[in-house]
Image (tube, rainbow, N blue to C red; front, top):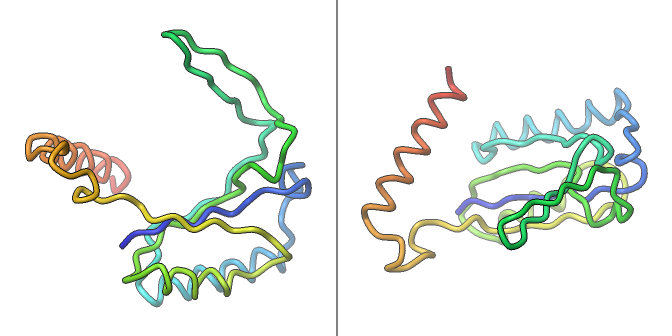
Length: 140
């Protein structure tokens, strides 16, 4: 099963404060442990909300609101995508995340079988082609 681990933002990291060398070293060590265990698929930190925007789609129109956004604790600061056999194993890794007090969300990534009959073989084939094209782009 794949899980997305969502690191919540706070005023400190949404202000654009760069991590210290010690913080980066500690996070790199944790990332290396996940790579060594063969579970890390990808992971990234996100720029502060002041460098982003929100788009609201409604009745065929789009409204764009530039950041920063006021509720930092509702924002995502970064993520990991891991592949482990169970939610319990994902949680065991999350409990080891280095750094200060923080709130972390863990969500299972939906797979083809989660969509039932609506995800027809034709749609599954189209999805597989799209994923292969995207992988080729990132590998090349």
